[in-house]
Image (tube, rainbow, N blue to C red; front, side):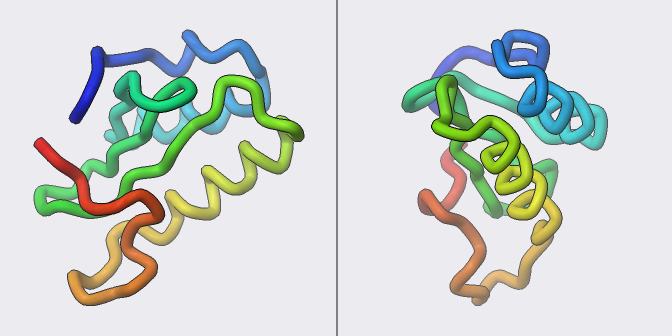
Length: 90
């Protein structure tokens, strides 16, 4: 993981903040990286990372995309859809 830990409440867009709050309650973590941060799944093995933008063009669509990608986890090790940004690094 790259940067410092972030909280869901740190995000300025309420639609995205709501999704992040649900995911962090389910064990996902957020770390500073890129344009705002990345979500890391709670799996024990390397798995899904989801980029979170600070200023997406459409807040609602970005929040839906985050929720949709999070719903895929956990995926099998050999799945090509496992991560959009590469494998999680600890």
